[in-house]
Image 1 (cartoon, one colour):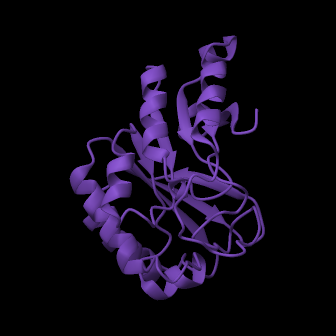
Image 2 (image 1 turned 90 degrees about the vertical axis):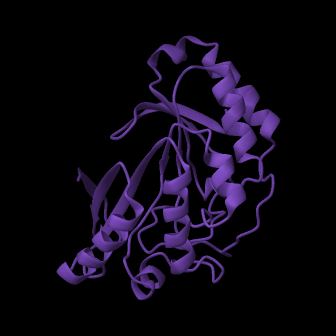
Length: 217
């Protein structure tokens, strides 16, 4: 399999069948904590990086196999930002037509300011976006985004998506030692989350360059 992997154990999604729609490090962020290394170059270009038909063939093959009995969720996640794939909405809907299993998308959420992206993700059962900072300054230090995906657009997109989306929103916050783990930084994140109103917040703790442990809040 080139684009589908697992199922693998997930702390949030049980046994998750992963779908990777993006080549390695195709992303609009260059996070300081990314375990895949630096993003070179950053991109906001949305296109069909991986043939949708090939992805769907692989998903269908797994769902027809004995592995399907062990799957709790089907998750769009991978080695880059999955919403950069221009056919992700079609992929989500096609997978939903194949199975009754719930579908999740793990995304940084930076493109949710685009109404088209919000509509494409609306068919999923759960969206897991990222919010690591409550200010533009920390956002730039931690997530090191493409210039087009500003902090204001990130927050506006999350709020707009919450108003429109009927599924679950589980926000992930990565706390990086000596960057966003101070009381002031946590208060700023909490203020943004009050506006977003997610269904859950998952807090991860990480030292730069080290593995992390996870708690939930």
